[in-house]
Every structure is written in C-alpha cells, then in structure tokens.
Length: 123
Image (cartoon, helix red, strand yellow):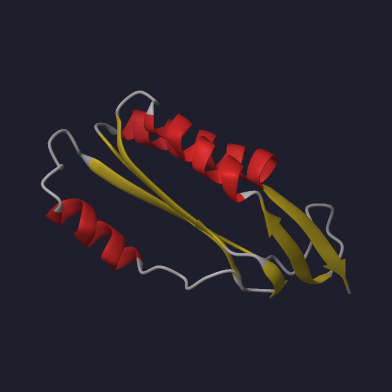
C-alpha cells in the first residue's frame, strides 16, 4: 500500500473546523474497493494498482473548479490489493446535491480513467 489510509471522520472534521464551510450544504464520499468479479463476471483474486501522483493533483485541481464545489479530497491506494481492499476514498463538499453528485461522478471517472492503472488478477 502506498500510504496510510486517511480517516473520513478526520477529513470532515478538518473541513468543518477550518472555517470554510460557507456555502457547503452537502458532503459526499465514495469508497471504491476491489471486487471479487470483473465487470465481465470473471472471478478476480485481487488487483495490481498504480497511481500517477502528478495527474492526481491535477485532477483534484480541476475538480475544485467544478460548479458548486467547495472542497475536494482524495486518497488512492497503490500496490497489490486483495478483494475487499480499498482502492480509493474521494470526498466532495459543495453547495447543493445536484452539483455535488455531478462533481463526485466526474471526479471518480477522471481518477479511474486518467490517474490509476488497474490490472485485475484472475482467479
């Protein structure tokens, strides 16, 4: 694993305690994990995951510019992961549900397509 998994409670406390909660009406969190089956239904025993840390920082900067977004955090694991292991935590805080949901979906898509390289390990 790349680094220590963050505490989602700590992230929320840091944001809420940082004095920059004006305009925040929603916090939304995504926790991606290694599935036991591929999207095609084949059994999987784990995953090799690598991360482009430079691109991660750029993608987070892009997400901060999305409509209604006030705060963004992301942690992405790295290395050989087993079924059930955490791939990523993503937090988006923003003004209204529609903006926050849209931003979270866009951010996770960018992370999955531009930041991480996943190799599912067959059964």
